[in-house]
Figure 1 (tube, rainbow, N blue to C red):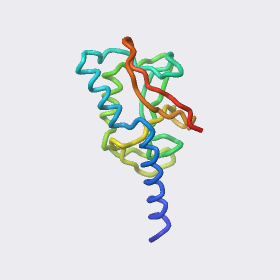
Figure 2: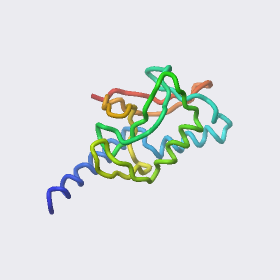
Figure 3: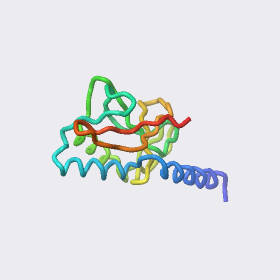
Amino acid sequence: MNFQMVLNALQDALRETRSSYHLTLGGLIDYLQIEVTQGRGNLPVVFSDDCTQFPTSVGSYRGYFSDLAIAHDGHIGSDVEKLLDMLRNVLDRQLIGYKGGEFIMDGDTPLWRANDGEAPNDAIMGVSFDGYKVILAIQNIY
């Protein structure tokens, strides 16, 4: 067994551990799909610790290149349908990691809130609906 195989096995094990406590790509897609079928596709999506920030795009997370980051902005908002489309577009697709490498974003991929090039350790831990908006629960885990 070469060094790269050992490193890959370790990364896979750590990702599996993160998937056990993070909201995953598949979990968020499933939840948003339910919101759309219930006629709430046009509702805003915000973050629990700052309801003025909205999801804007997705990409490889700088902290763990195999994980998915949801970028945010205070001016350009995303509704449920837009976020669902963004997530479906990366599901089971290969993304380039922040410093290179290729990673498949499958349904078990852990989610983070981070803009490109950032690694703030803001884990997306859950999702809820408060009657007016969909809220992504954020927890800083380090």
